[in-house]
Amino acid sequence: DAKTTQPTSMDCAEGRAANLPCNHSTISGNEYVYWYRQIHSQGPQYIIHGLKNNETNEMASLIITEDRKSSTLILPHATLRDTAVYYCIVFAGTASKLTFGTGTRLQVTL
Amino acid sequence: GAVVSQHPSWVICKSGTSVKIECRSLDFQATTMFWYRQFPKQSLMLMATSNEGSKATYEQGVEKDKFLINHASLTLSTLTVTSAHPEDSSFYICSAGEAYEQYFGPGTRLTVT
Image 1: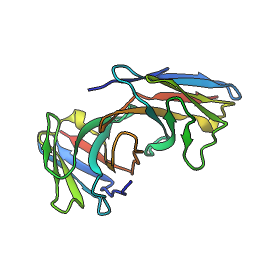
Image 2: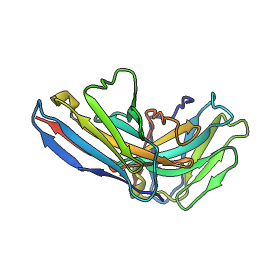
Image 3: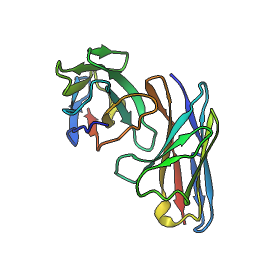
Image 4: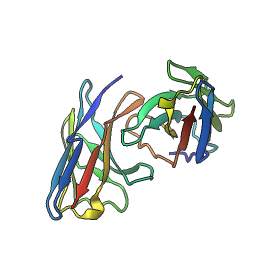
């Protein structure tokens, strides 16, 4: 699986948009970009995924650059409950292993 | 979305005993499940891939005789930590996939005293 790099930590004020970047310059053509988050002492929670088009769901938006070497997860209106570690992962499908990097620790503050 | 459960959610055992952790896919069938371990303030580390009807595949450095994995049905995989020691204390998480999504269990916190 392609390696990803993310900032170690970020802060965001409640109500503002949180933009979490991820670099995946060695991504292969059949690999998707996935985002998960892990709230303290819980299992990771799926957020969103995409191949090359931008995606949006009820939780977030995913912006993937045209060359697919980087992406940004956008939480449009961050709340305190969005405080978590966010993992950007690239992998090719169900039977493929997910390799977790260190992720970005997002702290949402009042 | 699909649901993956784990049991127990936490367990305390004495050094030298064995502990079994169950991972179930509740509303879908999973031929492949994954087991992860997470130490405090660290990321998830893949331990092994559990394959229904065949032997598990272990990551480098993971002792297959210590961490026994059984994937006896399409909805259940079990991880048994044999002869547990305090250094095995960790947060154990399983995941199962459906199509292009991986769903994670809530995790099992193991404390070995």
